[in-house]
Amino acid sequence: MDITSAPPEQHHLTRTDNLTTLQSHILAEEAKHPNSIASLSWILSAVSLSAKVIASKIRRARLNDVLGSLESDNVQGERQQKLDVIANETLLRCLGSRAGVAIVASEENEEPILLRTETSGDRKYTVLFDPLDGSANLDACGAVGTIFSVLRHDRRVTPVERSILQPGTQQVAAGYILYGPSVVWVLTTGFGVDMFVLDPAIGAFLKVEEGIRIPTKAKNYSMNEGNRKSFPEGYQRYLEWAQSNGYSSRYAGAMVADVHRVLLKGGVFLYPQTQKAPKGKLRLMYEANPMAMIIEQAGGKALADKQRILEIQPEDLHQRTSVIIGSSEEVEHVVAHL
Ligand code: P6P
Image (tube, rainbow, N blue to C red; front, side, top):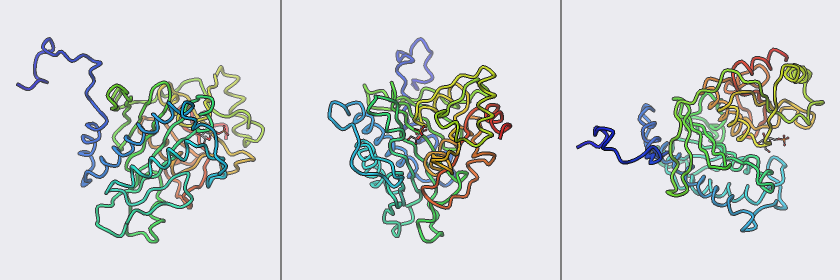
C-alpha cells in the first residue's frame, strides 16, 4: 500500500516529522531545469555540507578559540577573521570535489579557481560565494551568513575567467545560509523561493516554507545611518521622508541577516554609495546578484540607484555596487527621492 494514500488517521508521523529534506527538494527542482544533469544537485549538496560544517565551527568558535582576526587582509582590503578562512576553505574543498563545478570564485580569493576545466564536458557550472558574510559580527555572537550564486560555465568564452562575468539574470541558482538562532537556508533555482532549517538532531535541512512572497510594503528600512552625511542627497531625502512617516529602523550589519528579515517581514535594505565606498560597499557577483535573484523571485525589487541589479554587466569579479533591495513599494519610495 502506498503510505501517502493511507487515510490521515493511519499516519503516525506528525508535522514535526517533516521528511522533506533539502536533498529531495533539490532533486525535484533539478527536474524543472531542462537538459540539466545531476551536477546542479551535487553542487547544492556540496554547499549544504559546507553549511553544516561552518555552522558547527561557528557554534564552537569561542570554545575552540577560533574567533578573532588574522594578521592578513583579504582582496577587499578587509581584515580576515579566522572563521572567514575556515569557511572559505570548507567551501573550496566541498565544491572542488564536485564533477559539475568548472570554476569557483570567492570574496576571499583574488582570482577565480579553475578546476580542471579542460577535461570532460560535464563541468557545467561556476559557483561564486561570500563564505562568511558579516564575519565582523562573530566576536559579539552576531548573525553571519554564507551567500552563493551559480552560473552556467560558458566554455565558449575565453579566457576562461571571463566566463564568470555574466549579469545576474544568468544565474541558475542563488541562495544564502543564515547562521542565527537556527541555521536557515533560503534557495531559489528560478522557480520561486524556498526555505529550510537545519535540524541538528538529524543533520539535515528540512523544508519549512515554499514559494515565499515578500510583503509588498512594510514601514521599515535597514541601512547604516552612521554614513548618512556621506550618502548621495537623494538617499538623505529618503531618510528624512521615512523618519517623518513613522518608519522604524533595523540593522544587523550583516547583509544576510538584514535581507532575510526584509524577505520575511517586508521593508527595504539599502547600502548607498558613501565617501568611503564611492561605488557602494557590497560586491555585485556574490552578494548583490544572489540576493537580488532571491528577492525578485519572491516578488520584490533589487536596484542599484535606478538600474536593476541583475542587469548590470560585470567588468570585474570583485566589483562593488550600491543596493536598494526589498518590498516593491518600499524600493519605489527610495527611488522616488533619488
Ligand atoms: P557596514 C559585512 O561586512 C558587509 O559586507 C555586509 O554583510 C553588510 O551589509 C555590510 O558589509 C555592513 O557594512 O559599513 O555597515 O559595517
